Structure formats: C-alpha cells, structure tokens
Image (cartoon, rainbow, N blue to C red; front, side):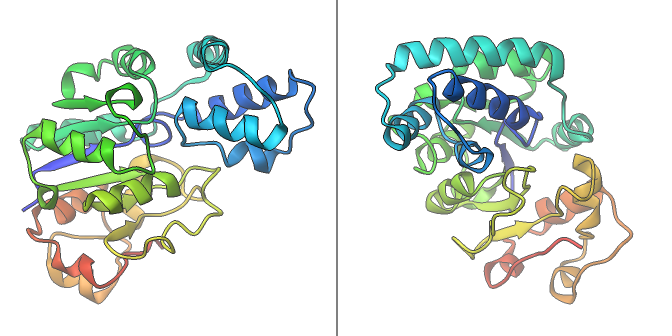
Length: 263
C-alpha cells in the first residue's frame, strides 16, 4: 500500500524552471558565448554542479563552481521574488495528503538554502516529513541517491512510495530507486518522451496544454476503482479522485505492465 508521496520541487511544486532558464541563458551569454534556447533547456533539472560541468564542457569555459553558484543563486533569487508561483492545485493536493495521513517528502537537485527559501515562502516547510537536497548526497539526479535517502527519511519502503517528477533526469532517478512515478512535464520537458527511458512503472498525467496542477491530474481521469486503470481513462474526475486512486489502490499492480496516459 502506498503511504508516502515524494515531490520534486522545481517544476512540480513551483514554476521555477522558467526562472532558471532565464538566469542560465543570461549567465552563459555573459561569458561571450552564443547559446541556443534548446541547449539551455537541456540543463533544466540538473544540480548546479552538474550544470556547470556541462556548460564548461560544451562551451570550452573554465568557470569556478563557487563563482557559478554565487551568481546563479543571487540572480535566480531576485527573479523568484518577482515571478515565482506555486503550481495551481498543489496547495490543495498537499493538504489532502496530510489530512489523509500520507507522509510527504521533497527530493530536489536544488541546494538546501533555495529549497528552504521556496518552501518557507509559501508556508510548506513544516508540511513535509523529509527534505533531501543536492548537498545531502554525493550524486544528484539522475543518480537514485536523492530518492533512496528521501524514502529512508520517511521511514518507508520504496514499494510504499510514489514520486512526482517533471524531467527525464528525475524519472531516471526515480526508476533507479525503484519507486512508482507520475510524470508531470514542464514546458521545457514536454517535448521529451518522458516514458521512453525507462518505460516501466510510470504514469503520465497530462501536458502543458492543460493549465494547472490539479486540472492536469484531473484530465488523466483515474478513479478509485482499480478496474478503471485497466479499462482506460474517464473525463470526469478530480485531483482528489486521481490521488485517491493512486494512493489507495494498494500494490499498484496495474501500473507494472503498462503506462497511464493523459488525455
């Protein structure tokens, strides 16, 4: 039976991928480098350490980690103050989970100071039973370490947890950790086939064409009865019904051999 939900932070809880895209594009251009939007998009989801490694390799730069982290965090924080928003429906979803005594965690490639800033800003910090960031592990996503540690901190087994991710990097981490996962693509990852690698144990809920966190979940049309998972999707549903289905179905065996697709 599912007892815990592990959330990615950026792109799942808040709309920060847009902010990181702007910050990263400006930073790279500041080093007299011509950069394509598609190349910047590919950096979304990695830890700052891994982002810098990819930037240095691609553009032949030799930027120090300390300088990179300082500038990127400072600029992104300023944009967060102006542009950051909680994804529609997340607050209600988190409340629903806590009311029903599910354990919740955040597993993010972001640094602890930014994780705390974001969660504190919206009053979410005390709502999570566990928080794991990039500095808490040796290797960030796509390594499974973050998810393995999050499950351990929740005091649960991997079979008792489901994760929500918005990038292929995150999905690889979840799969390697052995958790079930709902793929929740952001506008930078919506063109990627988030189900191709890996295929198993993932549910795909909607796309950026359907606005709003709860609305996208609702559009996947899952209900409380397991037979609906086998029989296809339904239009009438809600975020509550979807998570009721996913979280009360028990072993989630219906997910093992296939994929749940959004409408």
